[in-house]
Image (cartoon, rainbow, N blue to C red; front, side, top):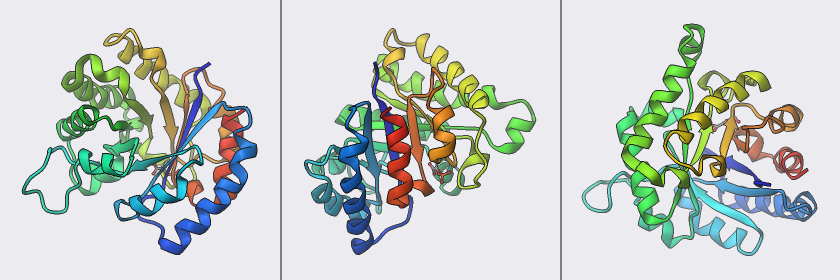
Length: 252
Ligand code: PEP
């Protein structure tokens, strides 16, 4: 059975002391939560803390993730961080195309696809976020939007697409306390799985995560859906007890 993947997205939160305290608490509880070995855990942290968190998670079974990666290999791109730089800190995952970056940093589908390409060619696994806004859902455009977003990534990456992680994150559910129902989420995940299947024979191996106000209570039903392979967790990843409770559900 494919292990579920629970990845925390700390966003622009944390600090040296707070990170240490949070990860200490998570690690204390993790041995128990992961006893069944049915879950993988990662934390995607602000870039300035990669070095600190690399040290803190060493040997704990928690993988390290970044929240973005440059589409460029190196050069005159002030403020950007390359995939090779992430590799220097043993980064396994990089979130790419989060709706907050699409919205506040004008990232297009094409730009996201290039970032995915750069991550894959460097051995960093991109967690590719797709998702519709509330207006798009209400207009019946959900499927069209997520398929368009994933299609750009597939076009640019060909058969390597089997190496990505996909995160379905309805924009209206992120940080709002409003979650997609298990049926709504499963329906979109099935669409994404079918789209992957038309491009790779390994589509069943691809983790498709759900993200958007996931907590321990709603995780039970969400994570029992056939095409939901884990979660991308924002707010709840900042509280050890909440994050551990979701991991425990995933590890069942
Ligand atoms: C996210 O930002 O990826 C996310 C899922 O946030 P939240 O869990 O807080 O909705």
